[in-house]
Image (cartoon, rainbow, N blue to C red; front, side, top):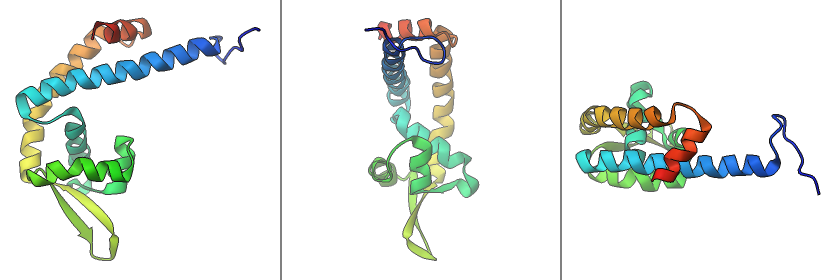
Length: 147
């Protein structure tokens, strides 16, 4: 049986292999950056990304479902992930006075301070990853295999 070719001429098996390798590389990159952030700042990469998205939002707040969209998560997963950040005062919960069903996550001053401190660590960690990868698919696979 012959393998069907995709638009770029790669076989289906090759495309699946690339996607599996990309998923593994994403997990490895996340773990790498997460370790640097948690060792120095006590937050993980997903915490950093939530704070990052909130900082960039108008008024430094987002509806939980909009934050979920930006994070690539479900609304319930974001709600669960925000709970520890709320407990330690990095994020506040706000309701919409016009619609009780809508909840907002808001970056607090403490969250903004931790994000500012963690940004340099995240920058160095991400530069380290990208310095090894150089947007080369084979290098991306080698980076993943090293972890």
